[in-house]
Length: 165
Image (tube, rainbow, N blue to C red; front, side, top):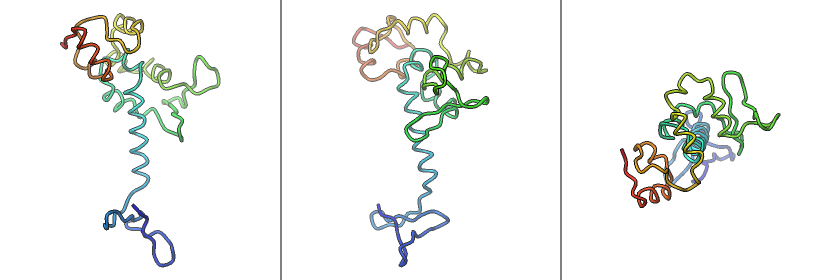
């Protein structure tokens, strides 16, 4: 893909957007929208990879990301979390930004949906004591929890005789 230039070497615009040539076709691309979508995808990936989400959330990571992703912004390679009170700083590392899991925990701390999205406390504590990459101790698991696992965990759970409820 190549940026289309006029005879003076300036970018050609269509509807205020730069025009690119790809496979012989001219395409106007809204770069701001592309960057925003890329950032949204990167933030969603954090939810899917989060051990905190996997161990503590009742709902699948995608649903959690759809609702709570609005609290996270990408600034280069740094993820910054902010709620209605402003940027969220770490409780453990004074003066530093909260990491993803810590920020999500802080956001959920007083959120009105906390009870709806969090697993019951006994399930959260059991998940914390589970070795990484190991299936849950229980042989029966809700489909949503199974879907939140990575492929290796899913295979291990099923091989150990696990069933979905």
